[in-house]
Length: 135
Image (cartoon, rainbow, N blue to C red; front, side, top):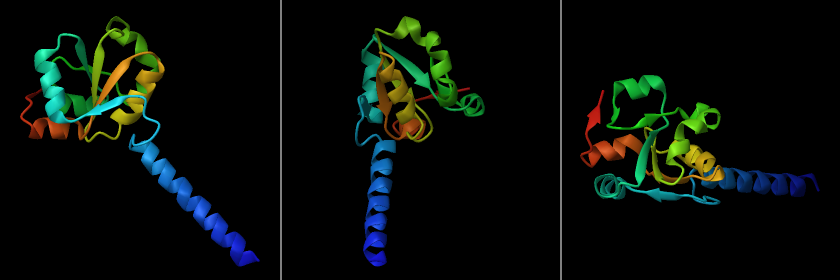
């Protein structure tokens, strides 16, 4: 009988871990769009109705960021949404280093009435695609 409960608990725990992983990657329950580096570049070059949001740390931003990016670290985003009030009608291209912090940032933005576009692969994918980084 104990083995039966152990098996059930094991599978419930495994299911929970798989669910959490898929949620944290934005694969499920994502009410925002994820775009690749090429799509982000196209929007930046051809759409005046976009703004750029860097959700990395201040230190990372100082090491290099995309031109015209607004910095709001993901841990401070909820408290600083007012900085983006003028961009509420725009699409917001959200990036971090690899794409993992921009997912929760995109969830926060979407939940507050913004239209986030999460960059898959973050600034690393944008740099690989040829986007200039400034200091």
